[in-house]
Length: 343
View 1 (tube, rainbow, N blue to C red):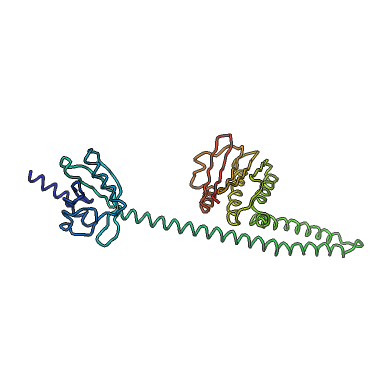
View 2: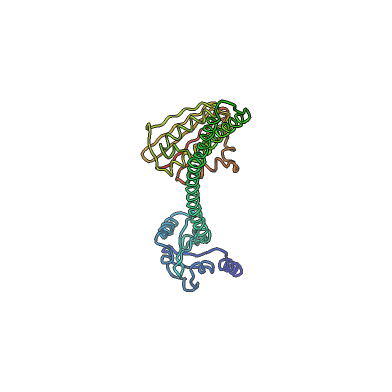
C-alpha cells in the first residue's frame, strides 16, 4: 500500500499537466509542480489557500457552479478557465473536474492552452493585417487601372484620331488627277490600320476601367456589360434590378463590377449556357446580386477546387467588403451565383 501511494504521489507531482484537489469551498488540498509553475508560486505557499484569487472573475463562476453541481452527481465536467499567475499575466486553461474521495474532494486536471491562445491571437492579428493589405492593394490596383485607362483613352486615343485626320487630309490633297494607285493603296491600308488600332485602344481602355462606371454608376455599367457580353458571345442575357436604379459608393461599385466580370467570363468559358439572367436588389443594409445560367452546372468539387483562381478571387473580393458569395449548381440545369454585401 505504501509503495502504491508513493507511485501515486510521483505521478501526481510530476504529471505534465496541472493537477489540484479542492474541497467543496474551493480550498486547495493538493497541487502538483506543473500547476504551481502555471501560477508562478511555490507549491507550499498554495496549499490550504482558496483557488478564487488565482482565477479571473469572469471564469470563477464556472468552477463555483461545478463544485456545487458535483456534490449532487458524479459526472465529469470540462470547461475553459483563465488563471492569474503571480506576475499578473493570464494563463488560459482547459480544465476537467471529477469527484474523488466519495464526494469529499474534487480534482481539477488543467491543460495549459496559453501558447495556443496566443498563437491564435497572433494569427487573427496577422489575418487582419493581410485583410487590410489586400484591401489596400485592391484599391491601388483599381486606381492604377483607372489612370492607365484614362491615359490610353486621352493620350493614345487622341493621337490616333489626329493621325486618322491627317491621313484623310493627305488623301484629299492628292487630288483626283494623276493619283498614284500604289500611294492610294497604302493610304487606304494605313487608314484601316488606324481604325483597327482605335477600336483596340477603346477596348483596352474599357476593359481596364469602363468610363460608364465612373460617369453613370454601377447599374448602368452592369447593364452595359451584360448587353456587350450578349453581343460578343451570342448568349441571351436578362437584366432586372429593384429598386429601378440606385447608387453605391465608388469603391464598393468597383468590387461588385469586377466580381460580375469574372462571373460572366466564367459563364462564357465553362458553362456552355445559352441564357444568363441577372438580378440586382438593394435593401436597407444589404446589396444582393444573383446570376443564373442554364448551362451544364458546376459541381461542389469544381466550386471548391484550390486552383479555381477565378472563384477564389471573387470570394476574396467579397470578403474585403465583409460580404459572401455562394455558388451552387445542378447537372445540366445550370449554375447560380449569389453575392451578398452589407451596405
